[in-house]
Image (cartoon, rainbow, N blue to C red; front, top):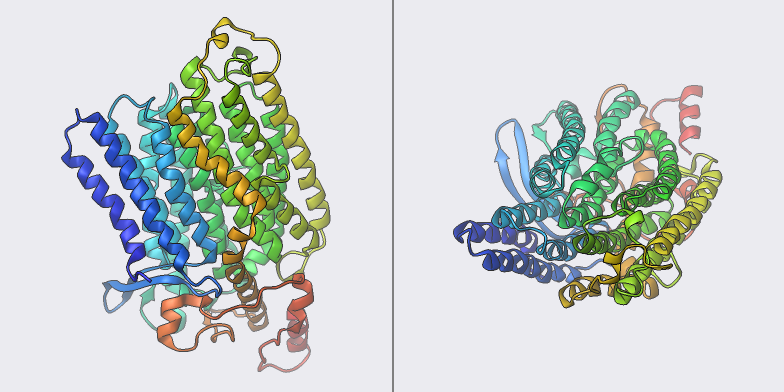
Length: 577
Protein backbone atom coordinates (compact mmCIF):
# COMPACT_ATOMS: atom_id res chain seq x y z
CA UNK A 1 0.00 0.00 0.00
CA UNK A 2 1.42 3.37 -1.05
CA UNK A 3 1.77 5.45 2.17
CA UNK A 4 1.88 8.74 0.25
CA UNK A 5 -0.80 8.04 -2.34
CA UNK A 6 -3.12 10.86 -1.27
CA UNK A 7 -0.32 13.41 -1.32
CA UNK A 8 0.65 12.13 -4.75
CA UNK A 9 -2.90 12.71 -5.96
CA UNK A 10 -2.67 16.31 -4.75
CA UNK A 11 0.82 16.93 -6.11
CA UNK A 12 0.27 15.53 -9.62
CA UNK A 13 -2.12 18.35 -10.68
CA UNK A 14 0.47 20.83 -9.39
CA UNK A 15 3.08 19.32 -11.70
CA UNK A 16 0.63 19.60 -14.58
CA UNK A 17 -0.03 23.24 -13.74
CA UNK A 18 3.70 24.02 -13.63
CA UNK A 19 4.22 22.30 -16.98
CA UNK A 20 1.39 24.33 -18.49
CA UNK A 21 3.04 27.55 -17.32
CA UNK A 22 6.28 26.50 -19.02
CA UNK A 23 4.67 25.91 -22.42
CA UNK A 24 4.18 28.75 -24.94
CA UNK A 25 0.63 29.97 -25.36
CA UNK A 26 0.75 29.23 -29.09
CA UNK A 27 1.30 25.49 -28.53
CA UNK A 28 -2.42 24.86 -28.25
CA UNK A 29 -2.31 21.15 -29.03
CA UNK A 30 0.46 20.55 -26.50
CA UNK A 31 -1.47 22.49 -23.85
CA UNK A 32 -4.52 20.30 -24.40
CA UNK A 33 -2.45 17.13 -24.26
CA UNK A 34 -0.79 18.19 -21.00
CA UNK A 35 -4.12 19.11 -19.40
CA UNK A 36 -6.00 15.95 -20.34
CA UNK A 37 -2.92 13.74 -19.97
CA UNK A 38 -2.29 14.91 -16.41
CA UNK A 39 -5.90 14.18 -15.49
CA UNK A 40 -5.74 10.72 -17.06
CA UNK A 41 -2.60 9.97 -15.04
CA UNK A 42 -4.45 11.24 -11.98
CA UNK A 43 -7.30 8.81 -12.63
CA UNK A 44 -4.89 5.91 -13.17
CA UNK A 45 -3.10 6.75 -9.92
CA UNK A 46 -6.38 7.04 -8.01
CA UNK A 47 -7.30 3.47 -8.94
CA UNK A 48 -4.76 2.36 -6.34
CA UNK A 49 -7.29 3.49 -3.74
CA UNK A 50 -9.24 0.32 -4.52
CA UNK A 51 -6.42 -1.66 -2.90
CA UNK A 52 -7.44 -0.37 0.54
CA UNK A 53 -9.10 -2.59 3.13
CA UNK A 54 -12.70 -1.39 3.05
CA UNK A 55 -13.98 -4.39 4.96
CA UNK A 56 -13.49 -2.18 8.03
CA UNK A 57 -14.57 1.38 8.71
CA UNK A 58 -10.98 2.52 9.29
CA UNK A 59 -9.56 5.35 7.22
CA UNK A 60 -7.19 4.10 4.54
CA UNK A 61 -3.95 5.63 3.20
CA UNK A 62 -3.78 7.90 6.25
CA UNK A 63 -1.17 10.67 6.25
CA UNK A 64 -0.68 12.91 9.27
CA UNK A 65 2.13 15.42 9.63
CA UNK A 66 2.53 18.57 11.75
CA UNK A 67 1.87 21.68 9.68
CA UNK A 68 1.34 24.78 11.83
CA UNK A 69 2.42 23.94 15.37
CA UNK A 70 2.82 26.59 18.07
CA UNK A 71 2.31 26.69 21.82
CA UNK A 72 -1.38 27.52 21.32
CA UNK A 73 -2.30 26.14 17.87
CA UNK A 74 -2.14 22.62 16.44
CA UNK A 75 -2.90 22.29 12.70
CA UNK A 76 -2.01 19.04 10.95
CA UNK A 77 -1.74 17.92 7.36
CA UNK A 78 -4.15 15.04 7.97
CA UNK A 79 -5.55 13.04 5.05
CA UNK A 80 -7.51 9.81 4.71
CA UNK A 81 -10.24 8.05 2.75
CA UNK A 82 -12.91 5.57 3.79
CA UNK A 83 -15.86 3.85 2.17
CA UNK A 84 -17.89 7.07 2.20
CA UNK A 85 -15.33 9.17 0.33
CA UNK A 86 -13.81 6.46 -1.88
CA UNK A 87 -16.28 6.63 -4.76
CA UNK A 88 -16.50 10.41 -4.62
CA UNK A 89 -12.73 10.62 -5.07
CA UNK A 90 -12.83 8.19 -7.99
CA UNK A 91 -15.79 10.07 -9.50
CA UNK A 92 -13.71 13.27 -9.36
CA UNK A 93 -10.68 11.77 -11.08
CA UNK A 94 -12.90 9.94 -13.59
CA UNK A 95 -15.11 12.84 -14.65
CA UNK A 96 -12.45 15.59 -14.72
CA UNK A 97 -10.57 14.46 -17.87
CA UNK A 98 -13.89 13.71 -19.59
CA UNK A 99 -15.17 17.21 -18.82
CA UNK A 100 -11.96 18.88 -19.99
CA UNK A 101 -11.75 16.86 -23.20
CA UNK A 102 -15.45 17.32 -23.99
CA UNK A 103 -15.08 21.11 -24.09
CA UNK A 104 -11.88 21.44 -26.11
CA UNK A 105 -13.62 22.00 -29.44
CA UNK A 106 -15.53 24.99 -28.04
CA UNK A 107 -12.69 26.64 -26.09
CA UNK A 108 -10.64 28.74 -28.50
CA UNK A 109 -9.21 31.46 -26.24
CA UNK A 110 -6.90 31.31 -23.22
CA UNK A 111 -6.46 27.57 -23.55
CA UNK A 112 -3.53 27.53 -21.13
CA UNK A 113 -5.54 29.26 -18.41
CA UNK A 114 -8.55 27.00 -19.02
CA UNK A 115 -6.53 23.83 -18.49
CA UNK A 116 -4.80 25.43 -15.49
CA UNK A 117 -8.16 26.26 -13.89
CA UNK A 118 -9.42 22.70 -14.37
CA UNK A 119 -6.32 21.18 -12.76
CA UNK A 120 -6.59 23.58 -9.82
CA UNK A 121 -10.27 22.74 -9.43
CA UNK A 122 -9.55 19.01 -9.42
CA UNK A 123 -6.85 19.48 -6.78
CA UNK A 124 -9.20 21.48 -4.54
CA UNK A 125 -12.07 19.00 -4.85
CA UNK A 126 -9.81 16.07 -3.97
CA UNK A 127 -8.46 18.04 -1.01
CA UNK A 128 -11.97 18.44 0.38
CA UNK A 129 -12.60 14.69 0.17
CA UNK A 130 -9.23 13.83 1.75
CA UNK A 131 -9.12 16.35 4.63
CA UNK A 132 -9.47 15.16 8.23
CA UNK A 133 -8.44 18.52 9.67
CA UNK A 134 -11.01 21.33 9.60
CA UNK A 135 -8.45 24.02 8.78
CA UNK A 136 -7.18 22.01 5.82
CA UNK A 137 -10.75 21.26 4.76
CA UNK A 138 -11.67 24.95 4.81
CA UNK A 139 -8.60 25.90 2.75
CA UNK A 140 -9.57 23.46 0.00
CA UNK A 141 -13.26 24.40 0.28
CA UNK A 142 -12.52 28.07 -0.42
CA UNK A 143 -9.89 27.25 -3.03
CA UNK A 144 -12.59 25.64 -5.20
CA UNK A 145 -14.30 29.00 -5.65
CA UNK A 146 -11.51 30.60 -7.64
CA UNK A 147 -11.20 28.19 -10.60
CA UNK A 148 -14.96 27.62 -10.85
CA UNK A 149 -15.58 31.37 -10.81
CA UNK A 150 -13.06 31.80 -13.64
CA UNK A 151 -14.42 28.88 -15.68
CA UNK A 152 -17.91 30.41 -15.63
CA UNK A 153 -16.91 34.07 -15.81
CA UNK A 154 -14.20 33.89 -18.49
CA UNK A 155 -15.23 31.03 -20.77
CA UNK A 156 -19.00 31.10 -20.26
CA UNK A 157 -21.76 32.46 -22.47
CA UNK A 158 -23.38 35.88 -22.80
CA UNK A 159 -24.38 36.49 -19.15
CA UNK A 160 -21.36 34.70 -17.74
CA UNK A 161 -20.20 37.53 -15.46
CA UNK A 162 -23.58 37.76 -13.71
CA UNK A 163 -23.75 33.98 -13.23
CA UNK A 164 -20.16 33.81 -11.96
CA UNK A 165 -20.69 36.63 -9.45
CA UNK A 166 -23.92 35.06 -8.21
CA UNK A 167 -22.18 31.73 -7.70
CA UNK A 168 -19.24 33.40 -5.96
CA UNK A 169 -21.34 35.54 -3.61
CA UNK A 170 -23.68 32.71 -2.58
CA UNK A 171 -20.82 30.35 -1.83
CA UNK A 172 -18.66 32.97 -0.13
CA UNK A 173 -21.40 33.97 2.31
CA UNK A 174 -21.92 30.35 3.31
CA UNK A 175 -18.18 29.80 3.60
CA UNK A 176 -17.68 32.80 5.89
CA UNK A 177 -20.44 31.66 8.23
CA UNK A 178 -18.88 28.20 8.34
CA UNK A 179 -15.48 29.74 9.15
CA UNK A 180 -16.98 31.58 12.13
CA UNK A 181 -18.57 28.34 13.32
CA UNK A 182 -15.26 26.48 12.96
CA UNK A 183 -13.44 29.08 15.05
CA UNK A 184 -16.10 28.96 17.77
CA UNK A 185 -15.97 25.15 17.76
CA UNK A 186 -12.18 25.10 18.03
CA UNK A 187 -12.24 27.69 20.80
CA UNK A 188 -14.83 25.69 22.73
CA UNK A 189 -12.69 22.56 22.48
CA UNK A 190 -9.62 24.41 23.76
CA UNK A 191 -11.65 25.79 26.66
CA UNK A 192 -13.06 22.38 27.58
CA UNK A 193 -9.78 20.48 27.24
CA UNK A 194 -7.50 23.15 28.66
CA UNK A 195 -5.15 22.47 25.76
CA UNK A 196 -4.17 24.22 22.52
CA UNK A 197 -6.47 25.09 19.65
CA UNK A 198 -6.79 22.03 17.41
CA UNK A 199 -8.66 21.57 14.14
CA UNK A 200 -8.50 17.77 13.97
CA UNK A 201 -11.85 16.16 13.29
CA UNK A 202 -11.04 13.17 15.50
CA UNK A 203 -10.70 15.39 18.56
CA UNK A 204 -13.45 17.88 17.78
CA UNK A 205 -16.05 15.10 17.51
CA UNK A 206 -15.45 14.29 21.19
CA UNK A 207 -16.64 17.77 22.19
CA UNK A 208 -20.13 18.04 23.68
CA UNK A 209 -21.68 21.49 23.36
CA UNK A 210 -24.90 22.81 24.91
CA UNK A 211 -27.85 22.19 22.63
CA UNK A 212 -28.42 25.90 21.99
CA UNK A 213 -24.81 26.31 20.84
CA UNK A 214 -25.04 23.24 18.64
CA UNK A 215 -28.11 24.63 16.92
CA UNK A 216 -26.52 27.79 15.60
CA UNK A 217 -23.14 26.20 14.82
CA UNK A 218 -24.89 23.44 12.88
CA UNK A 219 -26.99 26.08 11.11
CA UNK A 220 -23.81 27.85 9.95
CA UNK A 221 -22.31 24.61 8.61
CA UNK A 222 -25.64 23.56 7.12
CA UNK A 223 -26.09 26.85 5.27
CA UNK A 224 -22.69 26.53 3.62
CA UNK A 225 -23.42 22.95 2.59
CA UNK A 226 -27.05 23.65 1.58
CA UNK A 227 -25.89 26.38 -0.81
CA UNK A 228 -23.42 24.00 -2.41
CA UNK A 229 -25.93 21.12 -2.81
CA UNK A 230 -28.00 23.30 -3.62
CA UNK A 231 -31.02 22.87 -1.39
CA UNK A 232 -34.26 24.76 -1.97
CA UNK A 233 -34.49 27.76 -1.35
CA UNK A 234 -30.72 28.33 -1.81
CA UNK A 235 -30.69 26.94 -5.35
CA UNK A 236 -31.20 30.04 -7.49
CA UNK A 237 -27.52 30.36 -8.43
CA UNK A 238 -27.44 26.90 -10.02
CA UNK A 239 -29.58 27.35 -13.19
CA UNK A 240 -27.71 30.55 -14.10
CA UNK A 241 -24.34 28.92 -13.49
CA UNK A 242 -25.22 25.87 -15.58
CA UNK A 243 -26.71 27.83 -18.47
CA UNK A 244 -23.77 30.24 -18.71
CA UNK A 245 -20.92 27.82 -18.01
CA UNK A 246 -19.07 26.08 -20.85
CA UNK A 247 -19.79 22.39 -21.31
CA UNK A 248 -16.82 21.27 -19.21
CA UNK A 249 -17.78 23.61 -16.39
CA UNK A 250 -21.36 22.34 -16.35
CA UNK A 251 -20.18 18.72 -16.27
CA UNK A 252 -17.84 19.23 -13.29
CA UNK A 253 -20.34 21.44 -11.49
CA UNK A 254 -23.12 18.86 -11.73
CA UNK A 255 -21.02 15.73 -11.36
CA UNK A 256 -18.75 16.66 -8.45
CA UNK A 257 -19.19 20.14 -6.97
CA UNK A 258 -22.79 19.60 -5.89
CA UNK A 259 -21.75 16.44 -4.04
CA UNK A 260 -19.38 18.39 -1.81
CA UNK A 261 -22.33 19.79 0.14
CA UNK A 262 -23.73 16.32 0.86
CA UNK A 263 -20.27 15.10 1.81
CA UNK A 264 -19.87 18.05 4.17
CA UNK A 265 -23.02 17.01 6.04
CA UNK A 266 -21.88 13.38 6.34
CA UNK A 267 -18.27 14.00 7.28
CA UNK A 268 -18.45 17.17 9.38
CA UNK A 269 -21.81 18.70 10.31
CA UNK A 270 -23.60 15.58 11.52
CA UNK A 271 -20.75 14.00 13.55
CA UNK A 272 -19.82 17.34 15.13
CA UNK A 273 -23.36 18.35 16.13
CA UNK A 274 -25.46 15.22 16.76
CA UNK A 275 -28.19 16.90 18.83
CA UNK A 276 -28.66 19.67 16.27
CA UNK A 277 -28.58 17.13 13.42
CA UNK A 278 -31.36 15.17 15.08
CA UNK A 279 -33.36 18.35 15.62
CA UNK A 280 -32.96 19.82 12.12
CA UNK A 281 -32.69 16.53 10.20
CA UNK A 282 -36.40 15.99 9.47
CA UNK A 283 -36.78 19.61 8.36
CA UNK A 284 -33.82 19.32 5.99
CA UNK A 285 -35.20 16.04 4.65
CA UNK A 286 -38.52 17.78 4.08
CA UNK A 287 -36.72 20.52 2.14
CA UNK A 288 -35.18 17.74 0.08
CA UNK A 289 -38.65 16.45 -0.78
CA UNK A 290 -39.72 20.01 -1.64
CA UNK A 291 -36.70 20.17 -3.92
CA UNK A 292 -37.75 16.94 -5.63
CA UNK A 293 -41.22 18.25 -6.44
CA UNK A 294 -40.17 21.84 -7.14
CA UNK A 295 -37.29 20.80 -9.41
CA UNK A 296 -39.55 18.44 -11.34
CA UNK A 297 -42.32 21.01 -11.82
CA UNK A 298 -39.97 23.78 -12.95
CA UNK A 299 -38.04 21.43 -15.25
CA UNK A 300 -41.34 20.43 -16.88
CA UNK A 301 -42.03 23.97 -18.17
CA UNK A 302 -38.51 24.81 -19.36
CA UNK A 303 -37.90 25.70 -23.00
CA UNK A 304 -34.11 25.58 -22.66
CA UNK A 305 -32.59 22.09 -22.63
CA UNK A 306 -29.73 23.06 -20.32
CA UNK A 307 -32.09 24.64 -17.80
CA UNK A 308 -34.18 21.48 -17.80
CA UNK A 309 -31.12 19.41 -16.88
CA UNK A 310 -30.14 22.00 -14.24
CA UNK A 311 -33.52 21.83 -12.49
CA UNK A 312 -33.50 18.05 -12.74
CA UNK A 313 -30.29 18.21 -10.68
CA UNK A 314 -32.19 20.08 -7.95
CA UNK A 315 -34.70 17.22 -7.88
CA UNK A 316 -32.01 14.52 -7.84
CA UNK A 317 -30.15 16.17 -4.99
CA UNK A 318 -33.44 16.25 -3.08
CA UNK A 319 -33.52 12.44 -3.19
CA UNK A 320 -29.98 12.33 -1.82
CA UNK A 321 -30.88 14.68 1.03
CA UNK A 322 -33.88 12.52 1.92
CA UNK A 323 -31.75 9.38 2.03
CA UNK A 324 -28.99 10.98 4.06
CA UNK A 325 -31.23 12.40 6.79
CA UNK A 326 -33.37 9.26 6.99
CA UNK A 327 -30.42 7.76 8.91
CA UNK A 328 -31.31 4.22 7.88
CA UNK A 329 -28.50 2.04 6.45
CA UNK A 330 -30.11 1.34 3.08
CA UNK A 331 -31.12 4.98 2.66
CA UNK A 332 -27.67 6.36 3.48
CA UNK A 333 -25.94 3.82 1.24
CA UNK A 334 -28.43 4.66 -1.50
CA UNK A 335 -27.73 8.37 -1.05
CA UNK A 336 -23.98 7.85 -1.46
CA UNK A 337 -24.53 5.61 -4.48
CA UNK A 338 -26.96 8.14 -5.95
CA UNK A 339 -24.27 10.80 -5.75
CA UNK A 340 -22.17 8.62 -8.02
CA UNK A 341 -25.16 7.89 -10.26
CA UNK A 342 -26.09 11.55 -10.61
CA UNK A 343 -22.50 12.44 -11.44
CA UNK A 344 -22.41 9.92 -14.26
CA UNK A 345 -25.89 10.47 -15.73
CA UNK A 346 -26.14 14.24 -15.43
CA UNK A 347 -22.56 14.66 -16.59
CA UNK A 348 -23.46 12.70 -19.72
CA UNK A 349 -26.59 14.82 -20.23
CA UNK A 350 -24.59 18.05 -20.13
CA UNK A 351 -22.10 16.64 -22.63
CA UNK A 352 -24.99 15.73 -24.94
CA UNK A 353 -26.45 19.22 -24.55
CA UNK A 354 -23.06 20.65 -25.48
CA UNK A 355 -22.93 18.45 -28.59
CA UNK A 356 -26.24 19.72 -29.94
CA UNK A 357 -25.42 23.33 -29.01
CA UNK A 358 -22.15 23.13 -30.92
CA UNK A 359 -24.04 22.04 -34.05
CA UNK A 360 -27.16 24.24 -33.82
CA UNK A 361 -26.03 27.09 -31.54
CA UNK A 362 -29.32 26.83 -29.69
CA UNK A 363 -30.73 24.85 -26.79
CA UNK A 364 -34.39 25.80 -27.24
CA UNK A 365 -36.85 22.98 -27.81
CA UNK A 366 -38.68 25.11 -30.39
CA UNK A 367 -35.55 25.03 -32.57
CA UNK A 368 -35.09 21.28 -32.26
CA UNK A 369 -37.21 18.35 -33.41
CA UNK A 370 -37.02 15.30 -35.62
CA UNK A 371 -33.35 14.70 -34.78
CA UNK A 372 -33.65 10.91 -34.76
CA UNK A 373 -33.26 10.64 -38.53
CA UNK A 374 -30.08 12.73 -38.99
CA UNK A 375 -28.54 11.74 -35.61
CA UNK A 376 -29.58 8.15 -34.74
CA UNK A 377 -26.55 7.34 -32.54
CA UNK A 378 -26.94 10.61 -30.66
CA UNK A 379 -30.61 9.77 -30.16
CA UNK A 380 -29.79 6.30 -28.83
CA UNK A 381 -27.23 7.61 -26.34
CA UNK A 382 -29.57 10.39 -25.21
CA UNK A 383 -32.39 7.90 -24.60
CA UNK A 384 -30.11 5.58 -22.59
CA UNK A 385 -28.91 8.45 -20.40
CA UNK A 386 -32.50 9.67 -19.99
CA UNK A 387 -33.61 6.22 -18.84
CA UNK A 388 -30.77 6.28 -16.32
CA UNK A 389 -31.83 9.71 -15.08
CA UNK A 390 -35.44 8.64 -14.47
CA UNK A 391 -34.39 5.38 -12.79
CA UNK A 392 -35.29 2.64 -15.28
CA UNK A 393 -34.54 -0.84 -13.85
CA UNK A 394 -31.23 -2.08 -15.18
CA UNK A 395 -29.64 1.36 -15.01
CA UNK A 396 -27.73 3.00 -12.19
CA UNK A 397 -30.48 5.46 -11.32
CA UNK A 398 -32.91 2.71 -10.34
CA UNK A 399 -30.63 1.20 -7.69
CA UNK A 400 -29.96 4.47 -5.89
CA UNK A 401 -33.54 5.73 -5.91
CA UNK A 402 -34.96 2.37 -4.83
CA UNK A 403 -32.56 2.15 -1.87
CA UNK A 404 -33.33 5.72 -0.81
CA UNK A 405 -37.10 5.32 -1.01
CA UNK A 406 -37.17 1.89 0.64
CA UNK A 407 -34.79 3.04 3.37
CA UNK A 408 -36.77 6.22 4.02
CA UNK A 409 -39.96 4.16 4.18
CA UNK A 410 -38.45 2.00 6.94
CA UNK A 411 -36.87 4.92 8.74
CA UNK A 412 -38.06 6.78 11.76
CA UNK A 413 -35.38 9.39 11.32
CA UNK A 414 -32.27 10.10 13.40
CA UNK A 415 -32.00 7.84 16.48
CA UNK A 416 -35.48 6.44 15.88
CA UNK A 417 -37.45 9.63 16.42
CA UNK A 418 -40.21 11.05 14.22
CA UNK A 419 -43.16 9.54 12.39
CA UNK A 420 -43.45 11.67 9.26
CA UNK A 421 -41.10 9.70 7.03
CA UNK A 422 -43.89 7.71 5.40
CA UNK A 423 -45.66 10.75 3.89
CA UNK A 424 -42.32 12.25 2.85
CA UNK A 425 -41.45 9.00 1.09
CA UNK A 426 -44.80 9.03 -0.72
CA UNK A 427 -44.27 12.58 -1.95
CA UNK A 428 -40.73 11.71 -3.06
CA UNK A 429 -42.11 8.73 -4.99
CA UNK A 430 -44.41 11.11 -6.84
CA UNK A 431 -41.25 12.97 -7.86
CA UNK A 432 -40.06 9.84 -9.66
CA UNK A 433 -43.22 9.93 -11.78
CA UNK A 434 -42.81 13.63 -12.51
CA UNK A 435 -39.20 13.05 -13.56
CA UNK A 436 -40.31 10.44 -16.07
CA UNK A 437 -42.88 12.86 -17.47
CA UNK A 438 -40.57 15.82 -18.09
CA UNK A 439 -37.62 13.75 -19.32
CA UNK A 440 -39.71 11.66 -21.74
CA UNK A 441 -41.46 14.84 -22.91
CA UNK A 442 -38.00 16.25 -23.65
CA UNK A 443 -37.04 13.16 -25.68
CA UNK A 444 -40.27 13.27 -27.69
CA UNK A 445 -39.84 16.94 -28.58
CA UNK A 446 -36.22 16.53 -29.62
CA UNK A 447 -36.18 13.29 -31.59
CA UNK A 448 -39.61 12.21 -32.76
CA UNK A 449 -41.94 13.90 -35.19
CA UNK A 450 -41.07 15.78 -38.37
CA UNK A 451 -37.92 17.86 -38.80
CA UNK A 452 -39.04 21.35 -37.78
CA UNK A 453 -36.10 23.29 -39.26
CA UNK A 454 -34.07 22.67 -42.39
CA UNK A 455 -30.84 23.04 -40.42
CA UNK A 456 -31.75 20.00 -38.34
CA UNK A 457 -31.97 17.71 -41.38
CA UNK A 458 -28.26 18.11 -42.15
CA UNK A 459 -26.81 17.82 -38.66
CA UNK A 460 -23.89 15.36 -38.38
CA UNK A 461 -24.13 12.49 -35.93
CA UNK A 462 -21.67 11.89 -33.08
CA UNK A 463 -18.02 12.10 -34.06
CA UNK A 464 -15.50 9.49 -32.96
CA UNK A 465 -14.09 11.76 -30.23
CA UNK A 466 -17.59 12.33 -28.84
CA UNK A 467 -18.27 8.60 -28.80
CA UNK A 468 -15.02 8.04 -26.91
CA UNK A 469 -16.04 10.60 -24.28
CA UNK A 470 -19.53 9.15 -23.79
CA UNK A 471 -18.63 5.44 -23.93
CA UNK A 472 -17.22 5.10 -20.37
CA UNK A 473 -20.26 6.90 -18.96
CA UNK A 474 -22.62 4.49 -20.72
CA UNK A 475 -20.60 1.54 -19.43
CA UNK A 476 -20.90 2.81 -15.85
CA UNK A 477 -24.65 3.33 -16.22
CA UNK A 478 -25.17 -0.38 -16.89
CA UNK A 479 -22.36 -1.62 -14.64
CA UNK A 480 -23.87 0.04 -11.57
CA UNK A 481 -27.35 -0.98 -12.70
CA UNK A 482 -26.56 -4.69 -13.00
CA UNK A 483 -23.73 -5.08 -10.45
CA UNK A 484 -24.44 -2.54 -7.70
CA UNK A 485 -22.68 -4.53 -4.97
CA UNK A 486 -19.36 -3.68 -6.62
CA UNK A 487 -19.96 -0.14 -5.39
CA UNK A 488 -22.06 -0.79 -2.29
CA UNK A 489 -19.85 -3.33 -0.53
CA UNK A 490 -16.86 -1.01 0.15
CA UNK A 491 -19.08 1.67 1.72
CA UNK A 492 -21.19 -0.55 3.99
CA UNK A 493 -18.80 -0.80 7.00
CA UNK A 494 -18.18 2.96 6.96
CA UNK A 495 -21.89 3.75 6.72
CA UNK A 496 -22.72 1.34 9.55
CA UNK A 497 -20.00 2.85 11.72
CA UNK A 498 -21.21 6.37 10.89
CA UNK A 499 -24.75 5.52 12.00
CA UNK A 500 -23.68 3.66 15.14
CA UNK A 501 -21.29 6.39 16.20
CA UNK A 502 -23.82 9.13 15.53
CA UNK A 503 -26.42 7.29 17.59
CA UNK A 504 -24.05 6.70 20.51
CA UNK A 505 -22.78 10.27 20.55
CA UNK A 506 -26.28 11.67 20.39
CA UNK A 507 -27.47 9.58 23.32
CA UNK A 508 -24.39 10.29 25.39
CA UNK A 509 -24.62 14.03 24.70
CA UNK A 510 -28.33 14.05 25.50
CA UNK A 511 -27.73 12.22 28.75
CA UNK A 512 -24.97 14.62 29.82
CA UNK A 513 -27.23 17.64 29.12
CA UNK A 514 -24.27 20.03 29.50
CA UNK A 515 -24.40 23.77 30.12
CA UNK A 516 -20.71 24.21 29.28
CA UNK A 517 -18.54 22.49 26.64
CA UNK A 518 -17.22 19.12 27.81
CA UNK A 519 -15.11 16.35 26.30
CA UNK A 520 -16.69 12.93 25.76
CA UNK A 521 -14.97 9.76 26.83
CA UNK A 522 -13.94 7.44 24.00
CA UNK A 523 -16.82 5.38 22.68
CA UNK A 524 -16.55 1.58 22.80
CA UNK A 525 -16.20 1.42 19.01
CA UNK A 526 -13.40 3.99 18.95
CA UNK A 527 -9.65 3.40 19.38
CA UNK A 528 -8.41 4.06 22.88
CA UNK A 529 -4.69 4.60 22.28
CA UNK A 530 -3.80 8.17 21.25
CA UNK A 531 -1.78 7.15 18.19
CA UNK A 532 -4.63 5.16 16.67
CA UNK A 533 -7.17 7.79 17.62
CA UNK A 534 -5.22 10.47 15.80
CA UNK A 535 -4.35 8.32 12.81
CA UNK A 536 -7.75 6.84 12.17
CA UNK A 537 -10.07 9.39 13.79
CA UNK A 538 -13.34 7.92 15.01
CA UNK A 539 -13.81 5.21 12.40
CA UNK A 540 -10.92 2.93 13.31
CA UNK A 541 -12.82 -0.06 14.65
CA UNK A 542 -14.79 -2.33 12.35
CA UNK A 543 -18.51 -1.85 12.68
CA UNK A 544 -21.15 -4.49 12.18
CA UNK A 545 -23.50 -3.51 9.37
CA UNK A 546 -27.02 -2.79 10.57
CA UNK A 547 -29.36 -5.09 8.75
CA UNK A 548 -32.45 -4.08 10.67
CA UNK A 549 -33.96 -0.67 11.09
CA UNK A 550 -32.43 1.84 13.47
CA UNK A 551 -35.31 1.55 15.90
CA UNK A 552 -34.68 -2.18 16.32
CA UNK A 553 -31.04 -1.76 17.31
CA UNK A 554 -30.90 1.56 19.12
CA UNK A 555 -32.57 0.39 22.37
CA UNK A 556 -29.98 -2.38 22.82
CA UNK A 557 -27.14 0.07 23.45
CA UNK A 558 -26.19 0.68 27.04
CA UNK A 559 -26.54 4.32 28.08
CA UNK A 560 -23.64 5.90 30.00
CA UNK A 561 -24.06 6.06 33.76
CA UNK A 562 -25.13 9.34 35.30
CA UNK A 563 -23.95 10.78 38.58
CA UNK A 564 -27.15 12.64 39.36
CA UNK A 565 -30.01 10.97 41.18
CA UNK A 566 -33.65 11.77 41.50
CA UNK A 567 -36.61 12.37 39.16
CA UNK A 568 -34.74 14.75 36.81
CA UNK A 569 -31.93 12.29 36.19
CA UNK A 570 -34.43 9.47 35.65
CA UNK A 571 -36.30 11.62 33.12
CA UNK A 572 -33.11 12.40 31.21
CA UNK A 573 -32.08 8.75 31.15
CA UNK A 574 -35.53 7.67 29.98
CA UNK A 575 -35.46 10.27 27.19
CA UNK A 576 -32.05 9.03 26.05
CA UNK A 577 -33.29 5.46 25.94
